[in-house]
Amino acid sequence: MFQQINERSNSETTYQVATTVLKAFNLLEYIASHQPIHPPALCKALGLTRANLHRLLFTLSTLGYIEKTAEGYQLSLKLFHLGSRVPLTEQLKEAAKVQMVELQKVAQENISLTTLYQDTVISIEEVQSSHTVVLNPQATTSYPVNACSSGKLLLSTFEENELKRYMHQVQFVQKTEKTIMDKKEFAQHITMAAQNGYALDIHEFDNHLSSVAAPIVNRQQKVIAAIVISGPSMRLSEKRLNELIPPLKQAADTISRRMGYTKE
Image 1: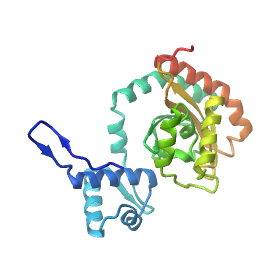
Image 2 (image 1 turned 90 degrees about the vertical axis):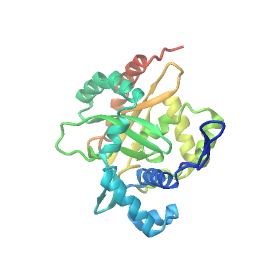
Image 3 (image 1 turned 180 degrees about the vertical axis):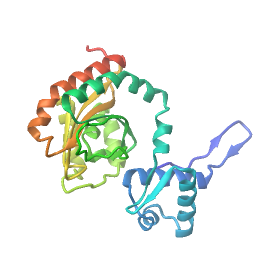
Image 4 (image 1 turned 30 degrees about the horizontal axis):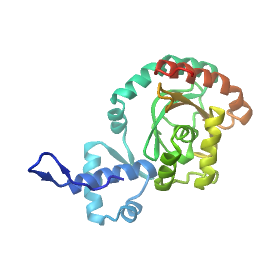
C-alpha cells in the first residue's frame, strides 16, 4: 500500500498528497492481490465507506482500469498494457522472445515471463500452448507471490535483511489448500529455489494447475524475472515437470546472458 507523505517541490511550497488518488491506487493494489473480489470485502479491508468505495469503483471502471464480473472486481488488461511499456519490461520481452517460442515447442505448454511488483507476480509475456485444454486463461496476468513457482525465485536473491523486511510486510493470499501460508515455510522454499535454480508449483495457485519456473538474472547477479512452464496437472505431472527442468534452465540462462549476466 502507498504511504501518505508530504513532498516539498521547492523551498517555499509544500504539497499534500491527493487523498482521492491515494485511495484509488490503494484500491487498485488490493484488487490486484485479491481479485476477483466483491465490494463488501473491499470496504472491510480498506476502511472505506460504501459510498466512497462505489464512487472509486465506478470511476476506475469507466476509465477502463478495472472490470466487474460475476465473481467480483478484477483488473483489466489496460493496466497490463500500461505496465508493458516500462523500458525494462520491453528489454526483457525482446531478450526472451525467441527462447520462449523455442521452449514452447519442447514443452507443448504455456510459457510465461513474470516479474515481481510488491506482493504480486505479474505475467508480462506469454506464449500459449497449442493444446485444446488450457487451464490458465490468458486473462490471468497476476498471482500472489506465495502461490506460484515464480514467487519463490523472484525473492531468492534478496539480501537477508531485505528478505526479512519483505516477509514481515507481505500479505499472503490463499488460493488452494496447498498454497503456502506459513512465512517460515515459504522462506525455506525460497532457499531451496536459490540452491536448485528452479521452483515448482503443484496445485498452489489452482487445484488443477502445475508449473515450474527458472530465474532470469542480470549483470548484478539479481533475479529480475522468471520464465515459467505451466499447464494442467493431468499433463504436467511431477515426472514431466522434472523432465522439463533442463530445457527450462537452458532457456533462462540464455535470456540472462542477453540481459548482461555473466558467470563468475
